[in-house]
Length: 460
Picture 1 (cartoon, helix red, strand yellow):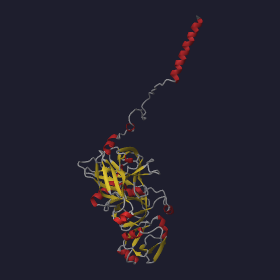
Picture 2 (cartoon, helix red, strand yellow):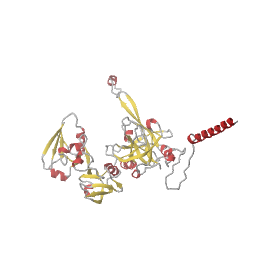
Picture 3 (cartoon, one colour):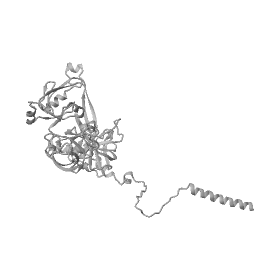
Picture 4 (spheres, one colour):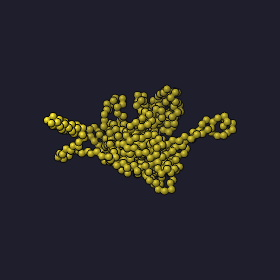
């Protein structure tokens, strides 16, 4: 009997120990720590969508945007070489086959004006636009600007169309949530989300782009970049990729730039570009290092162009541009991006640092009076009466800016008289003649300096 009692007692203790161990080591227990409120943030998990967790709701902006973003089809007729049958029987221009390119566009007015990229519609024989409700319309190209890669289309719809209003891209903040809406890989009405990764990004085209990590792929070009309010802050344009597809970053033309191009096309038929008239020094180049210019916060003025607003306002070489109107200038794309939203005749307030002092100078922008010549990249202007008298010439154009690779030749300020003995009278003639320069031939350029001494340079 005592043995049975002992065994029972051992069994009870063993069961208690087993149950305690299970409770201690294996059973999930909810713990709550009660502490005074010290102002620390409290995060709680839930089954809500990620946008709600982040405190941002994309649904309204997405719904409004997809109805204003269209699918653009560019049909180009490629004409093949004529065969012998065509030659003898005069059947025309050889075989033809249509090539279809696709992209996106954004409706910006209720009566059917659509903004897209120039490269989406370039060289088109026929343009078609498909709305989000699958209705298709023929589109007319109203105008385009290859430099900004913006084009304006028009369709005639039987009813008022949903559209997006341009937002103010200058107010866009780095880290702000954005949506990219378009038609990648012919997948219509695709919405992706990301943040603004950078502003005033330079891609080597003397332009200023908004950079985002929202996924953008071929077919998104010309589509909308919107903020969470549904404001159009950019036109998706490019990606950086070694494969041709999205790998992390994409770029959009800021809405202020696109809006200005569209308004110019509507009002003038072409783009009106305001011209400040300063020659900046690109930082971190051999020329900048030679000049002792390094790590400057702003845009260093290396020269002032003749007959420009900067010259009339008395901006000087050595000034560092720190701000234009309310836009802070940290690097060249900040400056070029803002000035590209202005027209000739517009006045801007330029804040410069000069010898340690800050100065506010009002500058009236002018129309560009110069051209950049193909092949060599020289910037030239037509001769004034003063130039004709000073240089004692009857024709020619004046070199006013020289790219870095040719700065060692002493070309700046000289007069271009002829190329291969063909006289140059205007900047348009110079552009045509320089466009004919072959990389494989020999080119002779005749110039004259301010002392009247002629010289000939031979480029091969």
